[in-house]
Length: 99
Image (cartoon, rainbow, N blue to C red; front, side, top):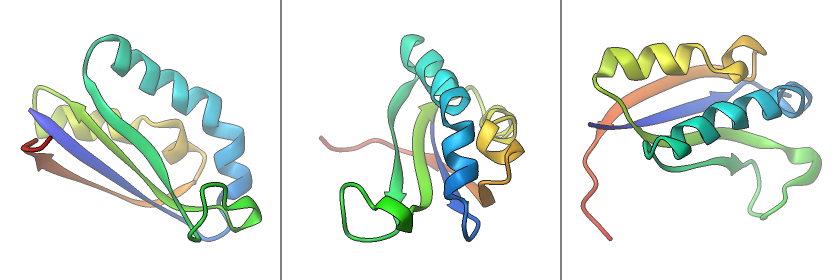
């Protein structure tokens, strides 16, 4: 099943996000290569493609896992969690309808 993983950043998370980004992307690349990643990306803190020093307010990952527990375990092991980027991570089952 597909799951939406929504990470909400702590205030002033930009430097921690930058430092943990390579490891975070490595895990996303592994999901993609396994055919289990539908989409992933950050939420800019301002209405701009590149928010610069304003940073990001969070991230969205839509990926396939065997269960909600597996999705939670994967999310809990994210480098952004370990680095303190996220204040909260919500996970919801996701049913892809369109396109």
